[in-house]
Structures are given as structure tokens and as C-alpha cells.
Image: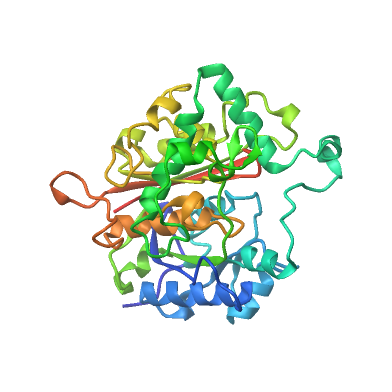
Length: 396
């Protein structure tokens, strides 16, 4: 077929996810972050069936002094469209939105989003614990002297939700239990042994009310997603998964500037994404939600409209988030059990696409009534301490 056009058809081209892949994940000693980038990129390109020559865009963040220039050089790419947006864990949903807009407008034809990190191996090598505090310049200077770490910011928000709406520790713990149950059938998950609510509650206290199992794991790993214009879809190896809508939003960095600890910026990014997709939460078959802490899952579900504000505690109970539950969430086990190598947002997109394609495998594939594959999936990333949000809605 002729090469893709650089001009949008009827004003906008449709954008598909053409390829997805993980690098080696979990406990990965030896490879550098650059090597994990390359491994994931090669696998995603092979998954797409496209030739590397079609890639004219690159989105990367978190590695190198001149990201994504260094990553492009390492991969042997010379993109004419780049993005290095860095807004924490939501970076990848935000960059996916940027890339989709660029492709739709004809500014690029195929954009590779790629990430890799040796967050666990780096700590192991240095024989020290991670430092979850941040710099003391700018607005953060007013909080850093008091030891206000990232986990404590999330813990404060969770306590406020408990105070306002009666959310219980048991309800928060059930999020971790269901994530681990989803991870049990995922061979790529770092932790697969089942846990109970009592085990979550009795664990080592990290930041009240979070015990250890309320918090994400720390792993190594990388992944890649290749977005392509509809013109390239006839050449792809697999049926496309389409970008139906996206939204982004930012909230705060200083906790005193956060108007309501019980409302995340997903309330805005989700509303925008649903409006652009022409869909509602009732149309979503499964959701991949950033879960550095159990409270993130609960409040994000509220803010995306899957339940009313204050009802998240009741919503996450009784197995609703399990692979065979009413709304399967984090079907790979999430950051709480599967992997969390620094920034997890891109992994959400990979899992959503695999589920829509029917590639998750017989033990963990989500199906609808009658054994049909899911049709619509949502991926929502959160950055910082509810500082930013990106939501992407995907469909077959």
C-alpha cells in the first residue's frame, strides 16, 4: 500500500495502538534502564508488525539529561516529533494524549512511547532505602523541613476521606487484597501469593493509615506502546485498539493549595476523556488505575464517575475489582502487586490493550457475558501526590 499521508483526512485521523510490550520486569539485575527501554521497544515493534522506519515520533521521560534525545540516540531513532513531558506517574497518559493529537493532526505518523527503570536494582546496589522526599526549592520549601514525604501526603488524603465519608481501613485493605488476587494468575507479576485483609491491617506501619501492603512494590522493568495513524493499520500484525478519547489535568504541588483532599484531578481528566469519547463510565468494561497506594484506586474510581463521591469504600468491597468482578480493575495486579518501577502509567496502557485484544491468557482474560471480549477500557494515571492526572479511553 502507499505510504501514510502526512495530512489529516477530514481534519483528523483516527489513532490506533499498533503495538505493546513489556521488557523483563520484577527483579532484573544486570541490564541498564537504557537496555530495558530498547528491549521493550523492540518487542513492541515486533508486536505491531510494522517496520521501524515508520516511527517518526518518540515520547520518553525520566532518563538522561536530554530525555528523550538520549533515548532516541540509544534506540537509533531520528524522530521529527518528540515529547518529554514529566508530570509524575500520569506522564504516560498525558504523553499518549499529546501523541494521539499529533498523529490525528498529521504532525506524526507513528509515535513510540517507551519507559525503563531499574528502581529496585539501584536501591539494592546502593544498600540503602529510597528517599521519598523532594527538593527544598520553590513551593516545596515550606513542607520539606517537616519531613513531609510522598507517602505521608497520600496518607493525609486517605485520612481525610475516612473522616469525611466513614471509609474504613478494611475497605482500603480490600483494594490490596483484590490486586493481589488479580496478580495471582499473572506470570509477570512480582508478588502472586494471596493476602488477606487482616494481613494488610497487621503489617508494618509506613504512614498512618498505610501499612506496608497498602503501598506499591518497588520493581525493575520497562514497557513500550506504539501509536499509529489509521493509514498504517492495514500493515499491522493485529487488529487495532483505538484511542477513543483522552483528558489531562493538574491540581497542586503544595498540600495547602489543594482545595479538597478527597477529590483528585482525575475528576477533570476523566470528565474530559469521556466527553471526547462520547461515552460514560457505564460503557467501560475494565479499568487500569494508578495504584501507588490503596487510596488512589478508591478515590480515582469515585472521581471518574464509577460511583458517587464518598461511596468508594463500599464500591471496592465484595470482589467488585477482581478479574471476574463487576468492574475489573488493575487486572495484572497493579502497582500493589505486579510491578512499579518508578512510574507505572505506561504499564496501564499495555494491560488495557492486551485485555481488549484478548491476549491476557486463559487464566486472567476478562470476558463479558457469553464469553465475549471487552470492548472499552480506561487507563488513568496519577502523578505526584494527586498533582496531575491523565485519562485515556480505548476501544476495539
